[in-house]
Structures are given as structure tokens and as C-alpha cells.
Length: 122
Image (cartoon, rainbow, N blue to C red):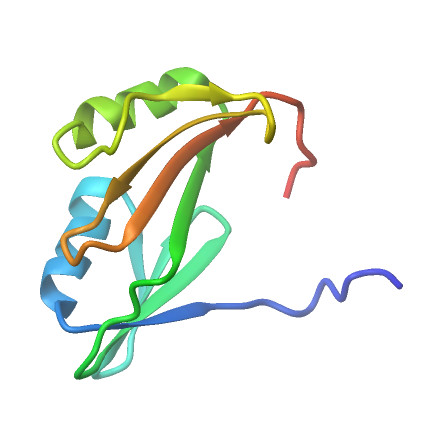
């Protein structure tokens, strides 16, 4: 069965640091604010929508991955996030990616990657 091209989606995370995350993801990562809904914000990065809602407890068991067309773009992100990076960018042959992991201000894991094999345009 073919995917329904009319369906769109948003992943939401609970946060205790709304303002810090809004600044981080817009100023540092390069996302834009797509919509604000009072206690929630939805961010846009290319074709990805993800949001944060202010709550008493934060969701920390997720991984937010941003992917880029070139390894050089990943390297530029590494230079920007070197202080919070868990390691230098490297190739992962199992998944055929070039990537590194870092943490956002709340401690949530984020990944910056490039697919080593051609991928379908989305």
C-alpha cells in the first residue's frame, strides 16, 4: 500500500526548558519556529516538524536527527557543537552514514548526519 502523501506529522517532546530550547534550536541548529501554541512550540527543519510542550517532566529518551546533503555540512555543525559533541564525526559503515552525536541544553540526544549512499529526495 502506498504512503498517504496528504498525511503530515509532528513529534512532540515534553520539556522543562522551553525558552532555552527555542533559542537553541533556532539560533544554534538553524530551525525556524513554525507555530507557537501557548505552552507548546513547533519547530521546522527542512521537511521535519517537531515540537516541545512545557511540562513538569522532560522527555529524554528520544533522539532527534538532522541530516545533510554533504559530509562538509556535518563537519560545520561539529565545529559549532564541539563542546556538547560526544565524539568527532565518523563513518558508521553498518548504517552507511557519517555522523556525530551531541546534546541539547536539556540533555536530550541529537544527531547530525549525512547518508553515504544516495537517498530518495523527500
